[in-house]
Image 1 (cartoon, rainbow, N blue to C red):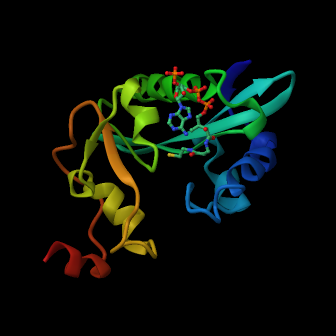
Image 2: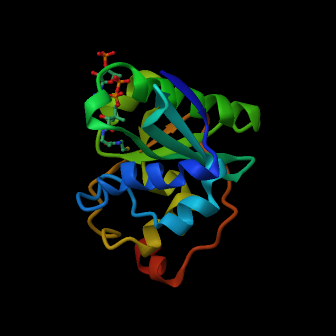
Length: 168
Ligand SMILES: CC(C)(COP(=O)(O)OP(=O)(O)OC[C@H]1O[C@@H](n2cnc3c(N)ncnc32)[C@H](O)[C@@H]1OP(=O)(O)O)[C@@H](O)C(=O)NCCC(=O)NCCS
């Protein structure tokens, strides 16, 4: 098994892998078009020419990146692939000189040994302004926010009007 940066022909398999988790809310829904547009954010895990896992690193700016869409096909779990992909994405963050990497998850116990600590979503306002404000679970979120590295000291996105109530 090896991890590598994704290329456009991988987009269909990436979409297939992550779409299995949209209904449960485990991963944020992403259209095929969104994956194509952002394919350079993705890495894939490849085994015998088949993609068995994927994950993405979204760059907010020099102060913050986010690990998203991380999944391993059910048939390939428990072999260290998920952990290896997280490490590969952290390496990408380092390459871009980003010291703060966040994520939202229902399985903090998977990410804690990789150096992530639980924070509040208000600690990462860019995530709040980008995704939470359009999420149907804005006021009943069942995910845990985590950060590896220092907390961002500023945000570059602006709050949407739907967040005024939350922040009041
Ligand atoms: C979470 C996921 C990516 C892990 O992939 P994986 O390849 O099976 O994980 P690894 O084999 O690298 O496991 C590394 C460690 O994490 C633990 N772990 C794996 N999955 C876990 C889970 N769902 N919850 C808690 N711990 C988990 C393993 O036991 C292992 O610990 P160990 O070294 O002490 O034995 C995979 O289970 C998956 O695709 N789940 C569905 C999608 C999902 O939940 N994605 C995360 C969204 S934030």
